[in-house]
Image 1 (cartoon, rainbow, N blue to C red):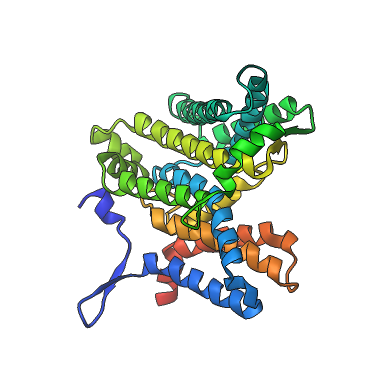
Image 2: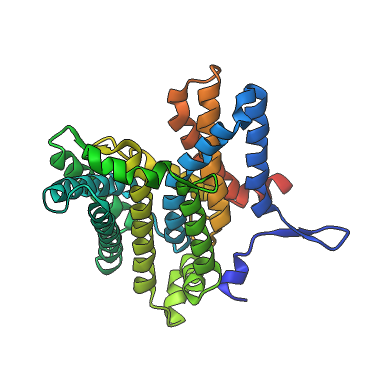
Length: 340
C-alpha cells in the first residue's frame, strides 16, 4: 500500500452503498452551522453586501493558506507569511511611487509593481526552502528568523511609519480589489482560480503525490528515489508565490503598508489549513478543506462584529483555540482511548 493510500480520509459505507467522507464533510457542516448562527444573530448576515465582504476578505488568507497546504502536507511549516506579505507590500509601494517620475501613474507602473511582487514572493519562498533543506535547519527556526527579517525590512523602508501608495496610481490599481466580473469580486475569482490550480497540482500530478509521500515518511521517500530537498523547496516557492498573489490584491485595498501589515496572517493561514483537514504532521492535505477553513475564520470574525456577546478583539484568541482543538481532534489516540 502506498503512502498516499495510507493517508486517505476515513470513509464509511452506508446501507445504500455510498461512501461518506466524514473528514471532508466535517468542515463543510461546521461552515453551514456558522452561517445558521450568523443568521440567527443578525438578519443582515445573509445580505449580499455582507456575504461579498466575507468572501472577499477570506480571499487574502485563503490564497496564502493554499500555499501553506503544500508546505504542511510535505511536513514543513512557514511562520513568515505575514511578515513576507508586509515586506512585499512595502517594496511594491516604494517601487511604484519611484516609477511615477519616469513612467507616470499608469498601467505600466502597476504591472511592474505586480512583477516585482511575484519575483520577491518566489525569491523569499526559495530562501526559506533552501535554507531549511540545504542548511539542514528546522523549518520552524528558519521561518521564525525570516519572519523577523521581513518585518524589520518593511519597518526600515517605512522609517517606522507607514508607506502610502501614490494617489494617482491607487486610482489605476483600485479595480484589482474593488472591481468585479459579473457581480463577483475580483479577489474571490482569483481565490477560486488559485484553489483550482492548487487542487490539480496537489491531487493530480506526480509532484502532489511526492508531497504526500514526503510528509508521510521522508526517509522512505528518499529511498524511493524522490528528490526530497527539491520537492520541499518547491513547496516553499509555491507558498511565496501565493503570498505574492494575495499581496497583489491586498495593496489596492488600503494603499499602504507598515510594520503592522499582515500581523497574525500566519496564524490564520495555518488555522485554515488545519481546520480544513490537512494533517499538521504532514502526509495528508486537502485544498478544498483549506478553502472552507479560510471562509470559516472570516465568518467567525464577521459574526463577532455583528454581536456584542464577544468582543471582536478576541478574534485572535478564538482562532488560536480553534487551532488547538483541530489538532487535538486529528490525533487518533484520544479516539482509541474513548473506544476502550
